[in-house]
Image 1 (cartoon, rainbow, N blue to C red):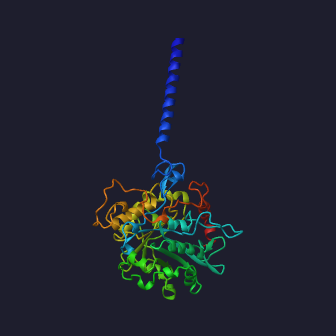
Image 2: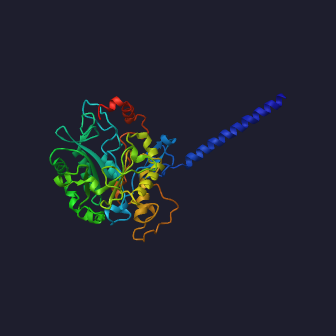
Image 3: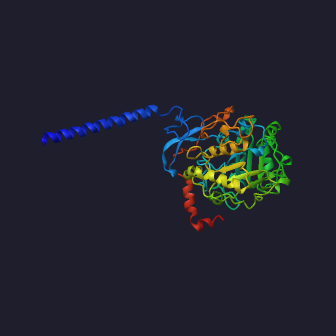
Length: 426
């Protein structure tokens, strides 16, 4: 019996040793066969952003239970680089909501900022990554015009970010460096200084790119082609939320030219795409651009990757139907870089593919081919397409780590859950 027991223990030890060696060998095989040094594609496991291919970064999405890092798309396909020369309203573009409200942006000296944040990288980097629309809140403040995320139409030192001219000079530098690109600025306008915006854009050097209001379609017809806009150097579209400024300063009144769904929580409610009250009805025939808002009332940085997964694609379909089969021209989001893989960039590829060539993704479009002639690809690629515009090949850059534990918006949401605090501001 003793010999039998010893033999059985020996057999168990041997089996355990074999199992250990097998697992160790499998681990070496996985490490040997895993991607690295820029060869990893979307959703491939990674340990550092240098593991991921061009236009990708290494992150995760704990909100969907994806805690291990994987490659996430961080740059857009520029649709005009695939199918060019069409009217401006035939394309879909990425817009950042409160583009200036950046995590870790420095506050005024000696002041603790008390507001929400909506983005993670600079406006310059947003533009490099393919963002083509900026939502900017402008206020009179400190004898100048500032970008501010504030309350009751007034900017405070604890809600202020920076003088607006600083961000507009970033836009000017981008347009100067990229002479075939077009940028749209949508202003939530609290500026009361006479001709304040006119002087601001002129001082920023942007007046030379201005698309004149007189040339904007007013009866729902097509816009000029992107080729015509570039040739005339009308590469900056600016809209204001104040109707009187169209006549006073020549700045287009937003809701005269843009259809828009409701912003905040109503705009992310599944199965519903309500018309914004300031906007013309979705069945209006006088506006040929459609702005789709997709961001919650209270932005939560680490929830954005979940919002930019299946729910976003579902909402695009919902708004497309609500607008009478009109595809959004502008898709406005918070924390645009966060997703479970392809994110907003994947959905924009799908939108542009359907409208430009009748394909499921712009990756299947073929310049010069009949509508509906698609490349034979097995599935829409979630990776950015290679194009000749070199300025978009740079790395994705965050103000902070994508895996940061501290999220300042959590504190704001907790504070705003108390009615007496809300009453201080509204």
